[in-house]
Amino acid sequence: MNIQMILEALFMIALLSPIFFLGKKTPNWKPKYLLFFVLYFVLDYCMTSLPFTFESLQISSLEMNWEGKILSYLGVLVFLILPKEKKLQDIGLNFRVEEDAKKYFRNNLLITSGIVIIYGILIGGYSYSFENALFQLTMPSIVEEIVYRGILLMLLNEVFQKNFKIGKTQFGMGVIITSILFGLLHGLSLGESFEIQMNWFSFLLTGAIGFYLGLSRERSGSLLLPILLHIIINLIPVIIGGIMQ
Image (cartoon, rainbow, N blue to C red; front, side, top):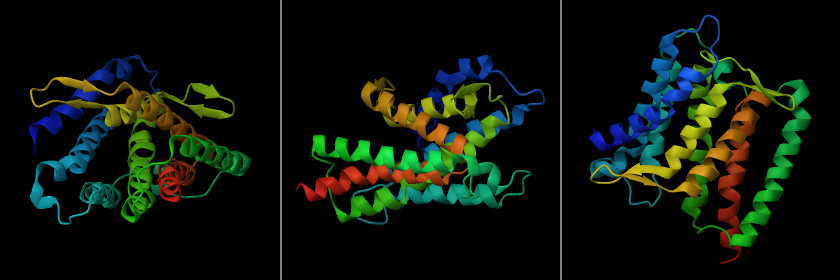
């Protein structure tokens, strides 16, 4: 495994370390959940990045990182089948929306779709190919939600209290940490000499999207809404790019 991948992942965790100490913790929190959080993030980050380092893992000639996302899916599967006290609904894999959140569910789907359509038209859409559309529909939009708004957020919610509130949405430091981490994932990298390279636009945009998706997960009680929103955000600009070609 490339040492650079591990260092990148650990560097992102190190940047967030002050928040781990400052966040208000639950009365009976256990350090093991923070340890599991760090280990799972590092492993998922490395698995997703492995095909870029080892050409032998690139089993196809396709452009998108199918192999990395499939490895991420396999990591999720291993996590789900391991003996543990947590259940699928704790991760959000129940796909049942809370009764009082159904209006929130519908409104967010409609509003997000409208905003993304307008954005896609204004920028002329993203580069279109059938492969890109299929990839956005089946890979990052689903597995990233299971990892970030599911597994990682669940682990952090075992540590931090949900002491913040926006409207009817109660959330904790877990949403904030996973949002920042999601932004770092898309905006930060280490160069060949381990110099820090930061795309601030990508960091801020994806961090904000991660926060929105985290709130959607907490408000609806399910990963269904953030998965659908992620698909909308990723897929619609690609389709618009194909229409406008």
